[in-house]
Image (tube, rainbow, N blue to C red; front, top):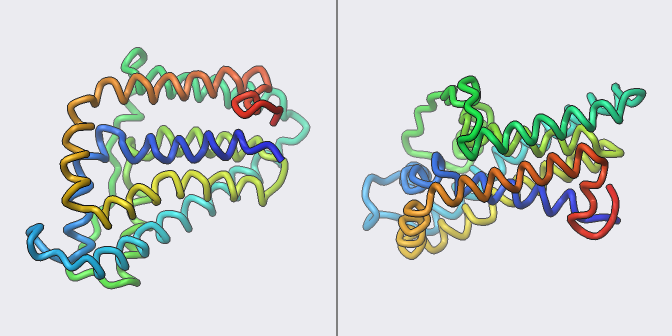
Amino acid sequence: MNNAPYLLSFTEGMLTFISPCILPLLPIYFFYLAGVAEKKDIQRGKLLLNGLAFVLGFSLVFVTLGATATGLGRFLQGHLDIFRQVSGVVMIIFGLHFMGILRLHFLDLDRHLDYEVGQLNFLKSIVFGVVFAFGWTPCVGIFLGSALLLAGNADSLGQGMLLLLAYSAGLGVPFILSALLFEVAQDFFRGLQRHGRLISVISGLVLILAGLLMYVGRIGTLGGGLL
């Protein structure tokens, strides 16, 4: 089994996490999930439990979208080569946009959905995660779109869902770790924010490389095999 596409999807999830438009918002999410307004009032147990529910919420949405993308890819099975090449070109465009070389304003539209968080519990935090998954663009949109293109080229429905589960893990694991180490994580995030431009360039290059390999049908060479 070639793990390269899953590794790429996981990496895209991590790049989503540290993207310049999500990183500054993380403390706000943590305060929402903890149900407090100040760091000194945070209950770690509640933050961790609600954080897990939040990750579960957006993971359910992403995995469902992965199944849908794979279903579409299988529907286009007679034209898989063309679909793969188009997917590669779109990933390259995403990368150029993220680097600031090519500006596509429709990717910059902020379509986030409002959700009255109040005092969140486990179930409400799942809903919060679902709202996050559906609504927040472009922070999620570009890398999620790339992961969905990978799923669209997957060989089976299960592989497509696993690809989006890997993406969710790439976004969710650092989120949970940050919730556990909230005070230390805040200092780390501030350091990352000072290198926002570098993060954008590296993220864009990852997307462009993946798009090129997708176009020529060698995305698996990221892990030494073939997809």
